[in-house]
Length: 239
Image (cartoon, rainbow, N blue to C red; front, side):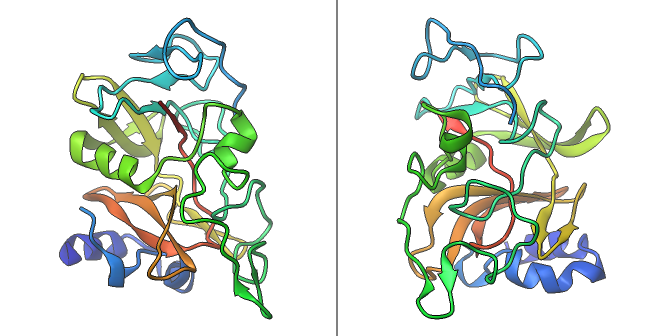
C-alpha cells in the first residue's frame, strides 16, 4: 500500500508539495485499501427515486449501485450541475466555500482552544454540507460507506466529457463518475485532473485534527485521513 501511495505522490507537481503536507494522506493511519434538488420519486431513499443511470440533465440523481448496505450514491458532487463538474471545495464540517484553506481560516480551530470537536461523525448533522445544501435525505458518506464503495465496486480511470476521473461500477453493473477535482489548500488548486479527494463524515479519533476521506489517482484508490481544514470535494449518499 505504501508503494501505491508513492505512485499517487509522483503525480503531484513540485509546486504543491507544501500544500500536500497538510492535505495529503495521513501515512500514520493508512489502513485502507450544487445542482438543483432532485424531484421526488415513488421509491428509494426518503422519497427520492433511485435510478440505474441519470434519466435527464436535472442533476443530482440518486444512483443504485447494488451495494449490500443499500446505500445509494449521488451522481454528482455538492455544488456541481453535472457528474463531471468539480463542484465546491469544503473544509471538513464547513458548509460554505472559502477563499483560502488552512488552520487560520478554519471555523473550528483557534489559537486559544485548538481544534474544536464538532462530532465523531458529522454525517446528517448541521456540519454536513450535503445536508445543508441539498436537504434531507442527502448526507455525507461515513467512512464505512466509503470502505464499502471501495471494497464492493470496481474502478476505472477514464474521462467524461474531457474530464479525468474514475468510473465506479457497483455489483449490479450501475456506475457513477467521480471527477479528479483535486483539492484546495491556502488559495491554490492542486492536483486537478490527476487526483480526487472526497470527505467522509468520520473523524479520525486518533488524530482529532484529521478526518477520513476517499482518495484516488490513476493507479490507486483507497481511504485515509487528512487535515480537517483542507478543501475537498463531497459526494453525497442516501439510504
